Image (cartoon, rainbow, N blue to C red; front, side, top):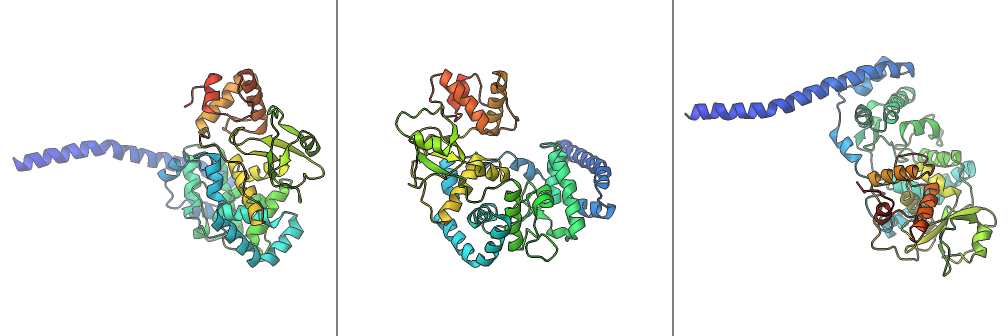
Amino acid sequence: MIFKRAAWLIGIVLMAATPALAQEQEQEQSFAAFVTKLWPDAQAKGVTRATFDTAMQGVTPDPRVIAATKKQPEYGKPVGAYINGIVTPGRIARGGDKAREWASTLDGVERRFSVERWVLLALWGMESDFGAAKDKWDVFRSLASLAYVQYRHPYFRNELIVAMGIMQKQRFARDKMVSSWAGAMGQAQFMPSSYVDYAADFSGDGHPDIWTNVPDVFGSIANYLQKFKWQHGMPWGFEVIVPPGFDTMKSRGSFTEWQKLGVRRADGKTYPREGNGIMFFPAGAKGPAFIVTGNFDVLKAYNNSDAYAIAVGHLADRMNGGAPIKAAWPTDDRPLPREARVALQRRLAVLGYKVNEFEGHVDFDLRDNIRTEQKKLGMVPDGNPTLVFLEKIGVTAP
């Protein structure tokens, strides 16, 4: 009787395991087919069979990578909380220490690329905690996992092939090819295509090494910013104090115009002599206001997030002796998740506005469109999308 019951239980377990086992085998076959189809494209880009096999040896889909696509630190918390979590006294102090340690190298990088050292240090601090945070993911497995499920297809598939080319051309060892979960590599956190386009051999040893060579890290970040038209001597932006009764529909103007409208810099400094700026309320009109410049867009080219760009710019300012943000961040600020931002973009397109992409990035053109709709609805036209605004224009937040 005991034997029959044991056999029955084993049968139940095997029946339950069979679908899972079949699913696993099906995934293995499907991934193998993906790899087979990948080879001709890699070969066409100059990747040798030996390189291809070395890169893909033992690679399987990583479920942790797919799960990580659902998490976005720049959008997972209020803007003020995100910035305050980045621009900490400890990070400011470490940045100052690194500025002194690498002063002569930074002198040379500034002369060559015309990008201020504090911005380079801020990006270095943001991306890898000044080199202390080490990449832990296999770049080929991460990129192959994203390419296999066609996440942002064909972007990650192309990045996978580019990574193979980097290993081949630079003759890097297979175990050196490590990255973030999404394939961003080294202390500069460059995607493979960015490495090819912007990595700089500032140390002069013949190999742009953004993993272990700090001069190359500085040179590569500076080269990236320079290629995206960084303006030396121009602030990324600055906090401002708007006068009572200010019309928040006004979003763009020259520095001279902003001064005439009574918009003052919160730090008491004067505006740059020439140039233009955009009025930006990252958490709505109840929170801090900023005038941002073209350099803000350059920082967003590094990571397309407003909160990220403010954090980098503010960290650079603080390391250079700047003051904290003066206005209080609203406690009820809740940034929209990506699905809601995409839904917002699609709704604005239906309403007749030009939308540049449907990836959930709320650019300044989109914020002006939001201002127009907010004014129609009798809301404060600050360009900041909220759940209440979505509901009023007929969007059900996902």
